[in-house]
Length: 449
Image (cartoon, rainbow, N blue to C red):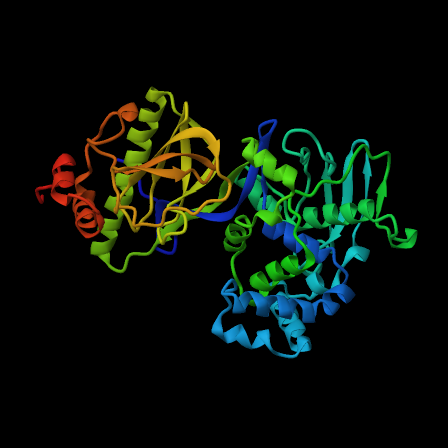
């Protein structure tokens, strides 16, 4: 039996993963890079002068109003006065929201004047202002950035190899086996892009020195000033999580450089998440604690003792970081990916559901922008449906199955742990859109234990 981890606060650690960041991902020389529009948008904002930010207030307010009137903009009731208030008040809401999270106004007050660096034959080096106070422990007033090149290269168009950086966001990603292209890196690249593309900038305002550049600076996301400001507004004024902002921004085709979009369609770039931690649950009493520990132990046993061995025997290989399953539903879960010859299997461990397997049989055709299936996971349990795999954006069929005697042929079968039998039975009776009794009999769940 797999031991159950208990934290000092009396919480039980579960197998459910909580994601920290979600975006486009690629692998180069064995290193994972996560590239997100929210960090690029905020980096663009950091590289914009305060005077331009101030002048943008009326235009941004109009931008919000138009989208809200078309039903395209979700803004909480408590903030709707910002649609019609004096632009100066809107500006102060920005600054107040930034200060509340960063304890300084630097994200607003800084601009290109605070960025310096050079691009040479061996890489790009830059210094970028921190968004937090340099008086805080572990925070530098300027963050040093180094990587091989911001110039376009064949393949995924990006060459962030050798990326060296020490901010908290980047450091956390490295702990989770991914190099996250953070706000500071994005700000440095944006400033280099602006200076290379605009020869009219006076020499005394140029911050990036180019030494024998061999090509154009490359931005994977072409986020304009208003959308960059919108990203900052949603993060700091509305307090929306960056990963939620990214899910929305990644669905907007105009945000992508055409070459970057082509690389997604070519299969060089996928959509993945990095993990924050495992979900922890605090039981209310001793009876609930016993039940929770038994459920967690059964899930861990299924994952480690059975599924891992079944995947190995059947020739499935673990791929990439984490993929989002049941996307857009209350049960959205980051999951491991196991793949073999176009068959993709993801075990779904979510504490609001008994364990499930999401199985895809994928073609070579891709559909980058799609609407995920949002039915309850048990509505079509066992049925094959046409679907798009969120990670690769490949089209094919999807089948959500109960890990038990009705498993896919490639993995064989296993028994349904008694602790989950009533859960499976209840959810099938409540949500399955078909012959419930026939499905229960096939799974051996027609009799109560």
